Every structure is written in C-alpha cells, then in structure tokens.
Amino acid sequence: MIIRKLRLKRGWSQSQLAEMAGVTTRTIQRVEQGNKPSMETRKALAAVFEIDLSTLELEDIQMQNETELRADEQYALIYAKRLKEFYEYLITYVFMAAIFLIVMHDEPVVYIIFAGLGMGLIVQGLIAFEKIYFFSPNWERKLVEKKLGRKL
Image 1 (cartoon, rainbow, N blue to C red):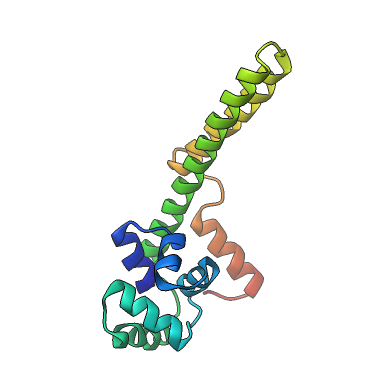
Image 2: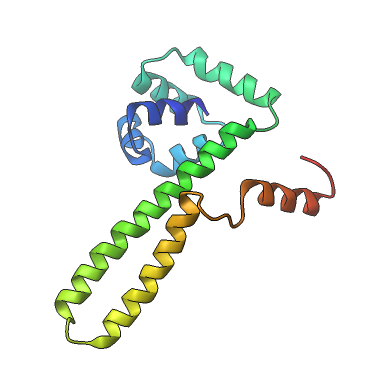
C-alpha cells in the first residue's frame, strides 16, 4: 500500500515507476496488489522514493497483521478506479468518433453506432460519478460473503 501511496503522491504512473526502478510494470502492479517484492525490487523502490529500506519491511509486517483495507480506503480506491476508467473510455470515444466521422461522414450507420456508444458512455459516467449505483462495494462484499458463507 505504501508503494501505491508514494507513487500517487508523486503523480507517477506505474510504468514511470517501473522504468525508474528498473523493473517491469507487472512487478509494480503485483507489489501494489499486496504481493511481497523481492529484496532487489525493495532496494530499487526504496532508492527511487528515497526512503529507508526498513520502511518497506515495516509495511510487510503491518500488512501481515491487517486483514483488509479500511472501508473508507477501499471506497476511495474503487472510486478513483471508476473515474480513471471513465476518462479512459471518454478519451477513446472522442478519438474514435473524430476519426470515423472524418473518414465516413456520409454514412448514416456511423452516427447510429456512435449515438449508441455515447449513451453507454453517459451511463458509465453516471456510475463513475456515483449518480446511479450498480454493483457498489457493499454489493460486491455481500457477494463475496455469500460465496464464503461467512463475514469478511
């Protein structure tokens, strides 16, 4: 968790951090998901963030004692992920619409397709900005608890 917080605090992408640390983006993703990094990866990350190696080792001990994220942290991470996905979809939609409308501006089917995709994008935005609720974190937690047959 500390790696993700430090990375976000500096405004770096996972790819940028991976490049600076000399590891793969997938390694950064695994570390941020809670997998224990190798000693070489820890040293590289500590050097990039200019922190003591013991800070990362202390986090491992703390993570072993914690069973889950706090509810507000979980909510904030999910919210940020939804917004990020929405903006990625929006950029893709605008880019693709511009290309298709320039190339195939006289085809009525293009307008129909992009109108449908635009409506889907609007729904995605309403979900991302929490104006409508589908599959909230509470719903997901209840689903997991049902599958486990116990509370988390």
